[in-house]
Length: 575
Image (cartoon, rainbow, N blue to C red; front, side):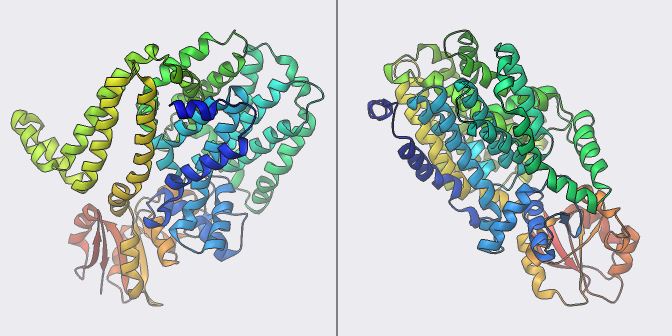
């Protein structure tokens, strides 16, 4: 920590050096092994297949998924993925690269914002804390619109507060225009929340911080023109080509998603509390104290930065908590401001001021130690479940069911992760209050190693169970001009890996809107139509889950031939 203190002491130089250091160091966990895993359905299959179809069709305006219209999201991620696929080919690395780069760029942006708001030490810590939050890194390595949104919002909201702090009429307008530009890109990333969040956060900050006079210096007229020039053309173009777009996108995908459980993603109001605690581990245990410190300092000299970050966090967290549609990645945009506030609290650790963190360090140490023990026990899960079932017979059935469905992770992976957690836990318990710098170093190194190890030791088992790649590869040699491929429910990865449109039977889920545009009945057969195809003369390949085969089996004539089994899914043929 003395070396870090010496390195971070300078406040006037080192910008490029720090950014390069962060980019090189954290480029490893964000970018390594990106192409080593198959695409995971449904998200990765969807966000890789739409750009593939854009390339094939030569149409960047109307997104399609399995060759039917798909209007749930704006196109920015599709465009970035299309460019990546064009440059690097149709492979998993190219499909994941834009999302991973957005995660890495968010770390760098977090550093830049923290450097201007506080100091170099806080900025370096903020970048390191964000880059060692395992949940943040792992979600950046999955193809999601949320990571792109997080980068755009971080850049937009960071540009605003940096521009607001200068607040003189002679200041260059560049930061103001960057604010409007990244708001526009946020809208193109995930819709209206790209402007609703910045507008709400900025308004509350100006109101509560008594800085409404800044409205006259925000270049509102020219800034809004820039915002519309970037964000509006696609919405106009897609609406002209598809009159049904506006109602579906703005009403169904925004208003109904927030006010109802139409998407089947209802969770309780407190859902994101445990989600945040888990995904920002180990730093999540320091969130309450960091928020309290920012609130206490809000009226002090320089305390406006903390107030702004608090509003940023509260608006997004409460918005999604109130929403009736909740998914884990939704709160990614609050990770950067949380990292900055936690880093600001940690910035005094090199001088040994850690007594206020005693309780958090104790709770964290106990939690990490328990996680370490759990990881070690996972290596012998059947034996552990049997032992626990003997002591609690009522739980025996539930434990056995858990063992049957739990991912099969190797013993050496469990050993490595378990030891890593245990070491961090022990150091936190022993050094949390007396030598907090040692605890901070252990947590940073442990988080960094976890970011590197998890994609190689844990994710292959999860991806193998959730990806249809093996089934698609087994189907490709069997495909002839007469062959029909059918999925029971959408499996977007099948289209990605085979390069062909598939028939979808059963519940269409996210393809429901597209299935009703024009006459798509031949591509969405019901149960009777599927059985007729099965008994027909053309070869039929059906991708389905094992339990779905059990339901269909009595009605299938001729009896199915099992071509390949992968995880919970099967590929069967009528020939």
